[in-house]
Image (cartoon, rainbow, N blue to C red; front, side, top):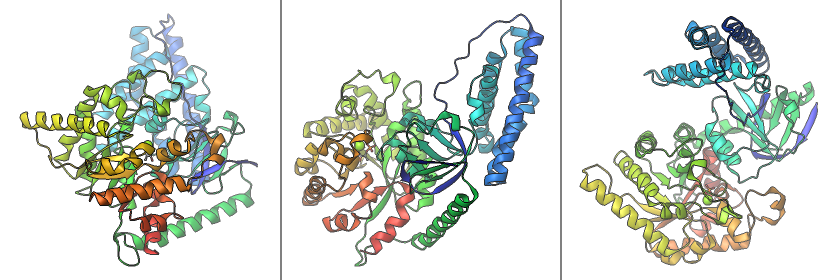
Length: 539
Ligand code: PEP
Ligand code: MG
């Protein structure tokens, strides 16, 4: 057994196979071949190896963590043998004289597209499985490492670090925990894990080597320990701990469906933070009373090009509809800093966190902003939506953003497109400047949500991505608490509500302080909802 120590950023125990995240996408060239029979044989050989790998993974999974987790591998195994999968590949090699890798890639893409267009939801989801199967076969054909690491299926996913755009692409059904060499507690890797309610450990260092891929591991998201090939004694202890955590979660169930009230009956809005439409499921399961932060930029990540107005509208509409009248606060685009997207062609910057990001991009590229605002307003006709601008640091910025929103409403009205003209417009308080001028901003906003992740990094001058300066980041720093207090007072003087949507909102050591300060709302990752409701009930 090898024991690696990191930092636990999302509690829970996960036991399974370690799989290294394959970063580089395959570059498959269209090579022409002359020996079609030989190429077809190469394909059959690779298919056989893939089937053996899948059998092995299915058996290991069934043995170690239960039959249901092995099912995915069995589905992949069946796909490999299906004539709908095999025949077009053979035909393409025979008629177009292309190499097996190219035929597998192209035919796999076509089959995935066919699945993606099916009416049946279950069949649509199989598109991702076809992609996985093709990747496995191509990896074998091209001698890549990826297939050996158990690149698909329920795994504990490991990497040096995960970028936000990578987390946006995860096949969520397959990832049961995350392990990273680097990372920070406030990074989006940690946020993703907590939203999904899966355990995560970061900062494991270089000892978390790709050579461990495919090994049986156990991960403790509380203590931050990763056990490689745990011995039976450790396994027994971890299983016991897992049972205890499950029991604790069961106890929290008594708070489900209840209003969030302090002991003396003060009502607090307890909302959830999400990054994608799929997170609504976790939100509803968490019993959150609304969505206090929809990080809409995740719709832009992991793509080749800008999402159109219609694509965005569909996503926002789905979220507000599924939330059935509960409020959904959609934060407008917060690209930049750690969330980089190639097609934005942002300038290379010395200090991207203090550079071209969020509202600054929207104000300098108004067409992009208009597209997003149109999509949000159109979705507002289907439920209880609100708009929130990130990274505001100046009154004129807020006014400019609101002027663009006015124009969007005017043009939608002229086009007779339905929307809710009363859609509230709030802002995030996440720069020290905005907290200091919150009295002025409050007069022109419908609500405030304090983004303590950025507010902390900008106030204390500690890069939230840089773990090596963690000791200089006192999240309970008096400066932050004073800025929050000041913001709450200014919001209430202007008659608007104010919440927190940064990580600090979930810190049980500060819940009492926040309630005393008068915060009206806390928006946290779904996995914290019930425990926070219990904490508030004690106050
Ligand atoms: C914050 O800064 O606190 C916040 C909630 O926004 P993000 O973490 O997405 O920057
Ligand atoms: Mg922020």
